[in-house]
Amino acid sequence: MRATGMISRAWLATAVVLAAGVASMAPALGATAAPHPAFAATAASVEDRLTSRQLQRETERVLAEGGFVGITVRVRDGARTVHARAGEAELHTGRPVPSEAEFRLGSVTKTFVATVVLQLVAEGSLSLDDTVERWLPGVVSGNGNDGSRITVRNLLQHTSGIYNYGTEEDTGNTAADFERTRFDHWDPEQLVAGAMRHRPDFPPAPADDPEPDWNYSNPGYVLAGMIIEKATGRPWAEEVRDRIIHPLGLTGTYAPGDDPYLKAPHAHTYHLFPGSGTWTDTTARNVSSVDAGAALVGTERDVDRFFAALLGGRLLPPAQLAEMRKTVSVGENVEAGFPGLRYGLGLMRQPLTCGGDTWGHGGDLEGFTVRAGSVGDGRRSVVVVAGGTGGGYEQLLAAERAVRGLVDRALCAGVG
Figure (cartoon, rainbow, N blue to C red):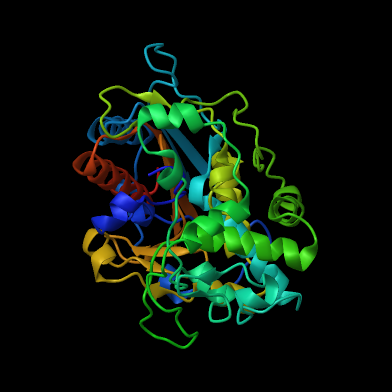
Protein backbone atom coordinates (compact mmCIF):
# COMPACT_ATOMS: atom_id res chain seq x y z
CA MET A 1 0.00 0.00 0.00
CA ARG A 2 1.29 3.47 -0.78
CA ALA A 3 2.17 5.73 2.10
CA THR A 4 0.75 3.75 4.97
CA GLY A 5 3.37 4.61 7.54
CA MET A 6 3.40 1.53 9.72
CA ILE A 7 1.13 -1.06 8.15
CA SER A 8 -0.51 -1.64 4.81
CA ARG A 9 -4.13 -2.40 4.09
CA ALA A 10 -3.07 -5.72 2.59
CA TRP A 11 -1.60 -6.69 5.94
CA LEU A 12 -4.71 -5.55 7.74
CA ALA A 13 -6.79 -7.70 5.42
CA THR A 14 -4.74 -10.73 6.38
CA ALA A 15 -4.62 -9.76 10.05
CA VAL A 16 -0.87 -9.38 10.01
CA VAL A 17 0.45 -6.06 11.31
CA LEU A 18 3.95 -5.05 10.30
CA ALA A 19 4.04 -2.67 13.23
CA ALA A 20 3.72 -5.44 15.74
CA GLY A 21 7.24 -6.71 15.42
CA VAL A 22 8.89 -4.84 18.25
CA ALA A 23 8.94 -1.86 20.47
CA SER A 24 11.62 0.53 21.45
CA MET A 25 12.71 1.90 24.73
CA ALA A 26 16.09 2.70 26.14
CA PRO A 27 17.81 3.79 29.34
CA ALA A 28 17.30 7.07 31.06
CA LEU A 29 19.62 9.91 30.17
CA GLY A 30 19.07 11.67 33.48
CA ALA A 31 16.65 11.23 36.34
CA THR A 32 14.94 7.85 36.23
CA ALA A 33 11.41 6.83 36.98
CA ALA A 34 10.52 3.74 38.98
CA PRO A 35 10.56 0.63 36.75
CA HIS A 36 7.18 -0.40 35.41
CA PRO A 37 6.17 -3.92 36.56
CA ALA A 38 5.82 -5.06 32.95
CA PHE A 39 9.44 -4.09 32.28
CA ALA A 40 10.81 -7.11 34.13
CA ALA A 41 12.62 -9.64 31.97
CA THR A 42 14.63 -12.77 32.63
CA ALA A 43 18.29 -11.84 33.02
CA ALA A 44 20.68 -13.70 30.75
CA SER A 45 23.81 -15.28 32.18
CA VAL A 46 27.18 -14.14 30.91
CA GLU A 47 27.46 -17.39 28.97
CA ASP A 48 24.18 -16.72 27.17
CA ARG A 49 25.09 -13.26 25.94
CA LEU A 50 25.80 -12.59 22.29
CA THR A 51 29.34 -11.94 21.18
CA SER A 52 30.03 -9.56 18.32
CA ARG A 53 30.67 -12.55 16.06
CA GLN A 54 27.41 -14.23 17.07
CA LEU A 55 25.46 -11.03 16.45
CA GLN A 56 27.06 -10.78 13.02
CA ARG A 57 26.00 -14.35 12.21
CA GLU A 58 22.46 -13.67 13.43
CA THR A 59 22.33 -10.54 11.28
CA GLU A 60 23.47 -12.41 8.19
CA ARG A 61 20.84 -15.07 8.87
CA VAL A 62 18.07 -12.47 9.10
CA LEU A 63 19.29 -10.88 5.85
CA ALA A 64 18.82 -14.20 4.09
CA GLU A 65 15.59 -15.29 5.79
CA GLY A 66 13.98 -11.87 5.38
CA GLY A 67 15.06 -11.49 1.78
CA PHE A 68 16.50 -8.06 2.54
CA VAL A 69 19.03 -6.13 0.49
CA GLY A 70 20.81 -4.67 3.49
CA ILE A 71 20.47 -4.61 7.26
CA THR A 72 22.11 -2.95 10.26
CA VAL A 73 21.72 -3.91 13.92
CA ARG A 74 22.72 -1.90 16.98
CA VAL A 75 22.59 -3.66 20.37
CA ARG A 76 23.33 -1.82 23.59
CA ASP A 77 23.85 -3.65 26.89
CA GLY A 78 24.57 -1.12 29.61
CA ALA A 79 27.46 1.00 28.41
CA ARG A 80 28.51 -1.53 25.78
CA THR A 81 27.26 -1.06 22.22
CA VAL A 82 27.82 -3.57 19.42
CA HIS A 83 27.01 -3.11 15.74
CA ALA A 84 26.49 -5.64 12.97
CA ARG A 85 25.63 -5.20 9.31
CA ALA A 86 25.07 -7.36 6.27
CA GLY A 87 24.14 -6.97 2.63
CA GLU A 88 24.61 -3.95 0.42
CA ALA A 89 23.97 -0.25 0.82
CA GLU A 90 23.13 -0.12 -2.88
CA LEU A 91 22.33 -3.05 -5.15
CA HIS A 92 25.14 -4.49 -7.25
CA THR A 93 27.80 -2.21 -5.77
CA GLY A 94 29.14 -4.40 -2.97
CA ARG A 95 29.25 -1.27 -0.83
CA PRO A 96 28.51 -2.22 2.81
CA VAL A 97 25.55 -0.75 4.67
CA PRO A 98 26.86 2.22 6.69
CA SER A 99 26.54 2.21 10.46
CA GLU A 100 24.71 5.11 12.16
CA ALA A 101 23.34 6.21 8.80
CA GLU A 102 20.24 8.31 8.25
CA PHE A 103 17.04 6.39 7.58
CA ARG A 104 13.33 7.12 7.48
CA LEU A 105 11.71 6.35 10.82
CA GLY A 106 8.30 5.49 9.41
CA SER A 107 5.78 5.17 12.19
CA VAL A 108 8.34 5.60 14.95
CA THR A 109 7.28 9.19 14.16
CA LYS A 110 4.01 8.45 15.95
CA THR A 111 5.71 8.19 19.33
CA PHE A 112 7.31 11.62 18.85
CA VAL A 113 3.93 13.11 17.93
CA ALA A 114 2.13 11.40 20.83
CA THR A 115 4.80 12.70 23.21
CA VAL A 116 4.21 16.29 22.09
CA VAL A 117 0.45 15.87 22.50
CA LEU A 118 0.95 14.54 26.03
CA GLN A 119 3.29 17.42 26.84
CA LEU A 120 0.51 19.80 25.82
CA VAL A 121 -1.86 17.84 28.03
CA ALA A 122 0.55 18.23 30.95
CA GLU A 123 0.72 21.97 30.27
CA GLY A 124 -3.07 22.27 30.27
CA SER A 125 -3.21 23.32 26.62
CA LEU A 126 -5.49 20.44 25.70
CA SER A 127 -7.01 17.29 27.17
CA LEU A 128 -7.02 13.67 26.07
CA ASP A 129 -10.81 13.87 26.40
CA ASP A 130 -11.08 16.85 24.04
CA THR A 131 -12.95 16.02 20.86
CA VAL A 132 -11.57 16.43 17.39
CA GLU A 133 -14.52 18.72 16.66
CA ARG A 134 -13.43 21.09 19.42
CA TRP A 135 -10.07 21.67 17.77
CA LEU A 136 -10.87 21.02 14.10
CA PRO A 137 -14.52 21.96 13.51
CA GLY A 138 -16.10 20.20 10.55
CA VAL A 139 -12.92 18.37 9.51
CA VAL A 140 -14.09 14.89 10.57
CA SER A 141 -17.58 14.56 9.13
CA GLY A 142 -19.59 12.83 6.45
CA ASN A 143 -20.24 9.15 5.71
CA GLY A 144 -20.92 8.46 9.38
CA ASN A 145 -17.73 10.15 10.61
CA ASP A 146 -18.36 12.42 13.57
CA GLY A 147 -15.53 14.44 15.12
CA SER A 148 -17.69 15.33 18.11
CA ARG A 149 -17.51 11.68 19.25
CA ILE A 150 -13.79 11.13 18.64
CA THR A 151 -11.31 12.19 21.32
CA VAL A 152 -7.61 12.95 21.23
CA ARG A 153 -7.11 9.72 23.17
CA ASN A 154 -8.89 7.80 20.40
CA LEU A 155 -6.53 9.24 17.80
CA LEU A 156 -3.38 8.29 19.70
CA GLN A 157 -4.72 4.87 20.66
CA HIS A 158 -6.11 3.89 17.23
CA THR A 159 -9.59 3.45 18.69
CA SER A 160 -11.25 6.23 16.67
CA GLY A 161 -12.59 3.95 13.95
CA ILE A 162 -11.31 6.33 11.25
CA TYR A 163 -10.62 4.47 8.04
CA ASN A 164 -6.92 3.91 7.34
CA TYR A 165 -6.79 5.84 4.10
CA GLY A 166 -3.62 5.66 2.04
CA THR A 167 -2.81 7.73 -1.03
CA GLU A 168 -2.44 4.62 -3.21
CA GLU A 169 -6.22 4.62 -3.47
CA ASP A 170 -5.79 7.69 -5.67
CA THR A 171 -2.36 7.07 -7.18
CA GLY A 172 -2.19 3.28 -7.61
CA ASN A 173 0.17 0.74 -6.06
CA THR A 174 2.40 -0.56 -8.86
CA ALA A 175 6.07 0.23 -9.45
CA ALA A 176 5.09 2.52 -12.32
CA ASP A 177 2.60 4.32 -10.06
CA PHE A 178 5.28 4.86 -7.45
CA GLU A 179 7.72 6.27 -9.99
CA ARG A 180 5.03 8.60 -11.33
CA THR A 181 3.96 9.97 -7.95
CA ARG A 182 7.01 9.63 -5.69
CA PHE A 183 7.64 13.41 -5.59
CA ASP A 184 4.01 14.51 -5.21
CA HIS A 185 3.07 16.81 -2.34
CA TRP A 186 0.08 16.01 -0.11
CA ASP A 187 -1.52 18.39 2.35
CA PRO A 188 -2.74 16.90 5.65
CA GLU A 189 -6.24 18.12 4.81
CA GLN A 190 -6.15 15.98 1.65
CA LEU A 191 -5.16 12.91 3.64
CA VAL A 192 -7.98 13.38 6.13
CA ALA A 193 -10.47 14.09 3.34
CA GLY A 194 -9.47 10.78 1.76
CA ALA A 195 -10.38 8.97 4.97
CA MET A 196 -13.67 10.84 5.17
CA ARG A 197 -14.74 9.34 1.83
CA HIS A 198 -15.16 6.07 3.76
CA ARG A 199 -17.45 5.10 6.58
CA PRO A 200 -15.66 4.54 9.91
CA ASP A 201 -14.69 0.98 10.71
CA PHE A 202 -16.49 1.16 14.07
CA PRO A 203 -17.78 3.75 16.57
CA PRO A 204 -15.07 5.51 18.60
CA ALA A 205 -14.33 3.86 21.93
CA PRO A 206 -15.21 5.50 25.26
CA ALA A 207 -12.20 6.17 27.50
CA ASP A 208 -13.29 3.54 30.01
CA ASP A 209 -13.94 0.75 27.47
CA PRO A 210 -11.78 -2.21 28.62
CA GLU A 211 -12.04 -4.00 25.25
CA PRO A 212 -12.36 -1.33 22.56
CA ASP A 213 -12.42 -2.00 18.84
CA TRP A 214 -9.04 -1.20 17.29
CA ASN A 215 -7.70 -0.38 13.85
CA TYR A 216 -4.41 1.13 12.82
CA SER A 217 -5.22 4.55 11.37
CA ASN A 218 -2.58 6.84 9.93
CA PRO A 219 -5.16 9.62 9.36
CA GLY A 220 -5.68 9.61 13.13
CA TYR A 221 -2.10 10.77 13.59
CA VAL A 222 -2.41 13.27 10.76
CA LEU A 223 -5.29 14.73 12.77
CA ALA A 224 -3.14 14.69 15.92
CA GLY A 225 -0.55 16.73 14.06
CA MET A 226 -3.22 19.19 12.95
CA ILE A 227 -4.43 19.52 16.56
CA ILE A 228 -0.87 20.27 17.72
CA GLU A 229 -0.73 23.11 15.21
CA LYS A 230 -4.13 24.44 16.25
CA ALA A 231 -3.17 24.34 19.94
CA THR A 232 0.28 25.90 19.56
CA GLY A 233 0.06 27.97 16.39
CA ARG A 234 3.02 26.07 14.93
CA PRO A 235 3.33 22.94 12.73
CA TRP A 236 3.77 19.62 14.52
CA ALA A 237 7.27 19.22 13.06
CA GLU A 238 8.44 22.47 14.67
CA GLU A 239 7.03 21.42 18.02
CA VAL A 240 8.77 18.03 17.77
CA ARG A 241 12.00 19.79 16.85
CA ASP A 242 11.93 22.31 19.70
CA ARG A 243 10.45 20.07 22.39
CA ILE A 244 12.30 16.80 21.67
CA ILE A 245 14.95 16.86 18.94
CA HIS A 246 16.98 19.90 20.03
CA PRO A 247 16.79 19.35 23.82
CA LEU A 248 17.94 15.73 23.45
CA GLY A 249 20.68 16.51 20.95
CA LEU A 250 19.21 14.27 18.26
CA THR A 251 21.53 15.61 15.60
CA GLY A 252 20.39 13.20 12.89
CA THR A 253 16.64 13.53 13.37
CA TYR A 254 14.44 15.95 11.44
CA ALA A 255 11.22 16.33 9.47
CA PRO A 256 12.20 16.55 5.78
CA GLY A 257 9.12 18.37 4.53
CA ASP A 258 9.01 18.07 0.74
CA ASP A 259 12.73 17.27 0.45
CA PRO A 260 12.75 13.74 -1.02
CA TYR A 261 16.44 12.98 -0.45
CA LEU A 262 18.32 11.52 2.51
CA LYS A 263 21.65 12.97 3.57
CA ALA A 264 24.82 10.90 3.35
CA PRO A 265 25.65 8.42 4.61
CA HIS A 266 22.57 6.32 4.01
CA ALA A 267 21.57 2.99 2.53
CA HIS A 268 19.15 2.68 -0.36
CA THR A 269 15.71 1.18 0.18
CA TYR A 270 14.01 -1.18 -2.27
CA HIS A 271 10.52 -2.59 -2.66
CA LEU A 272 8.93 -5.33 -4.77
CA PHE A 273 5.60 -3.87 -5.86
CA PRO A 274 2.64 -6.05 -6.91
CA GLY A 275 3.17 -7.45 -10.40
CA SER A 276 6.85 -6.53 -10.44
CA GLY A 277 9.71 -9.00 -10.56
CA THR A 278 12.46 -6.46 -9.94
CA TRP A 279 13.35 -4.11 -7.12
CA THR A 280 12.22 -0.49 -7.24
CA ASP A 281 14.56 1.96 -5.51
CA THR A 282 12.28 3.86 -3.10
CA THR A 283 14.98 5.90 -1.36
CA ALA A 284 14.05 9.27 -2.84
CA ARG A 285 10.43 10.14 -2.10
CA ASN A 286 8.22 12.90 -0.76
CA VAL A 287 6.82 11.69 2.58
CA SER A 288 4.19 14.42 2.93
CA SER A 289 1.84 11.57 2.03
CA VAL A 290 2.24 10.24 5.58
CA ASP A 291 2.75 13.56 7.40
CA ALA A 292 2.59 13.28 11.21
CA GLY A 293 2.04 9.53 10.90
CA ALA A 294 5.46 8.59 9.55
CA ALA A 295 7.53 11.44 8.08
CA LEU A 296 10.59 11.78 10.36
CA VAL A 297 14.17 10.88 9.45
CA GLY A 298 16.64 9.77 12.11
CA THR A 299 19.55 7.54 13.14
CA GLU A 300 19.88 4.44 15.29
CA ARG A 301 21.56 6.44 18.06
CA ASP A 302 18.80 9.04 18.01
CA VAL A 303 16.00 6.47 18.16
CA ASP A 304 17.64 4.86 21.19
CA ARG A 305 18.27 8.22 22.86
CA PHE A 306 14.69 9.39 22.29
CA PHE A 307 13.12 6.35 23.91
CA ALA A 308 15.69 6.52 26.68
CA ALA A 309 14.57 10.02 27.55
CA LEU A 310 10.91 9.07 27.26
CA LEU A 311 11.20 6.09 29.60
CA GLY A 312 13.47 7.97 31.92
CA GLY A 313 10.88 10.64 32.58
CA ARG A 314 12.75 13.45 30.84
CA LEU A 315 9.99 14.16 28.32
CA LEU A 316 6.75 13.56 30.22
CA PRO A 317 5.58 13.91 33.82
CA PRO A 318 4.70 10.61 35.53
CA ALA A 319 0.94 11.03 35.00
CA GLN A 320 1.24 11.48 31.25
CA LEU A 321 3.81 8.71 30.88
CA ALA A 322 1.43 6.42 32.76
CA GLU A 323 -1.35 7.34 30.31
CA MET A 324 0.96 6.53 27.43
CA ARG A 325 1.61 3.07 28.89
CA LYS A 326 -2.06 2.18 29.32
CA THR A 327 -2.54 -0.39 26.59
CA VAL A 328 -5.54 -1.98 24.91
CA SER A 329 -5.95 -5.17 22.95
CA VAL A 330 -5.42 -4.94 19.21
CA GLY A 331 -7.98 -7.69 18.65
CA GLU A 332 -7.90 -11.40 17.98
CA ASN A 333 -7.14 -11.07 14.28
CA VAL A 334 -3.95 -9.09 14.82
CA GLU A 335 -2.91 -11.13 17.84
CA ALA A 336 -3.19 -14.27 15.73
CA GLY A 337 -0.12 -13.02 13.87
CA PHE A 338 1.55 -11.31 16.83
CA PRO A 339 0.59 -12.90 20.17
CA GLY A 340 0.38 -10.53 23.08
CA LEU A 341 0.61 -7.27 21.15
CA ARG A 342 -1.06 -4.33 22.89
CA TYR A 343 -1.19 -0.63 22.04
CA GLY A 344 -1.01 2.44 24.28
CA LEU A 345 -0.83 6.11 23.27
CA GLY A 346 1.78 5.95 20.55
CA LEU A 347 3.49 2.98 22.22
CA MET A 348 3.39 -0.75 21.51
CA ARG A 349 3.97 -3.54 23.98
CA GLN A 350 4.80 -7.12 23.04
CA PRO A 351 6.07 -10.00 25.19
CA LEU A 352 9.51 -11.56 24.95
CA THR A 353 10.15 -15.30 24.97
CA CYS A 354 12.36 -14.89 28.05
CA GLY A 355 9.70 -12.99 29.98
CA GLY A 356 8.88 -9.32 30.24
CA ASP A 357 8.02 -7.06 27.31
CA THR A 358 9.38 -4.74 24.69
CA TRP A 359 7.90 -1.25 24.53
CA GLY A 360 7.95 1.37 21.80
CA HIS A 361 7.14 1.46 18.12
CA GLY A 362 8.40 0.28 14.76
CA GLY A 363 8.18 1.76 11.29
CA ASP A 364 7.56 0.66 7.72
CA LEU A 365 7.17 2.25 4.33
CA GLU A 366 7.72 0.68 0.94
CA GLY A 367 11.34 -0.39 0.97
CA PHE A 368 12.30 -0.57 4.64
CA THR A 369 11.54 -1.91 8.11
CA VAL A 370 12.59 -0.34 11.40
CA ARG A 371 12.38 -2.32 14.64
CA ALA A 372 13.77 -1.27 18.02
CA GLY A 373 13.24 -2.30 21.62
CA SER A 374 14.46 -2.44 25.16
CA VAL A 375 13.88 -4.52 28.28
CA GLY A 376 14.22 -4.23 32.01
CA ASP A 377 15.00 -0.72 33.17
CA GLY A 378 16.40 0.15 29.77
CA ARG A 379 19.91 -1.17 30.24
CA ARG A 380 19.50 -3.36 27.15
CA SER A 381 18.21 -2.15 23.78
CA VAL A 382 18.28 -3.01 20.08
CA VAL A 383 17.61 -1.14 16.83
CA VAL A 384 17.21 -2.99 13.53
CA VAL A 385 16.99 -1.20 10.17
CA ALA A 386 16.46 -3.35 7.07
CA GLY A 387 16.01 -2.37 3.43
CA GLY A 388 14.32 -4.48 0.77
CA THR A 389 10.64 -5.31 1.35
CA GLY A 390 7.60 -6.62 -0.50
CA GLY A 391 7.24 -9.78 -2.53
CA GLY A 392 3.87 -10.96 -1.26
CA TYR A 393 2.30 -12.09 1.97
CA GLU A 394 4.54 -15.09 2.66
CA GLN A 395 7.72 -13.10 2.15
CA LEU A 396 6.48 -10.23 4.30
CA LEU A 397 5.57 -12.62 7.08
CA ALA A 398 8.94 -14.41 6.82
CA ALA A 399 10.76 -11.08 7.01
CA GLU A 400 8.79 -9.95 10.05
CA ARG A 401 9.39 -13.23 11.86
CA ALA A 402 13.10 -13.11 11.11
CA VAL A 403 13.48 -9.56 12.42
CA ARG A 404 11.31 -10.26 15.45
CA GLY A 405 13.44 -13.30 16.26
CA LEU A 406 16.60 -11.22 16.10
CA VAL A 407 15.14 -8.54 18.36
CA ASP A 408 13.95 -11.14 20.84
CA ARG A 409 17.30 -12.89 20.88
CA ALA A 410 19.23 -9.65 21.34
CA LEU A 411 16.99 -8.39 24.13
CA CYS A 412 16.86 -11.68 25.96
CA ALA A 413 20.60 -12.32 25.71
CA GLY A 414 22.24 -8.92 25.44
CA VAL A 415 25.88 -8.75 24.42
CA GLY A 416 28.99 -9.92 26.23
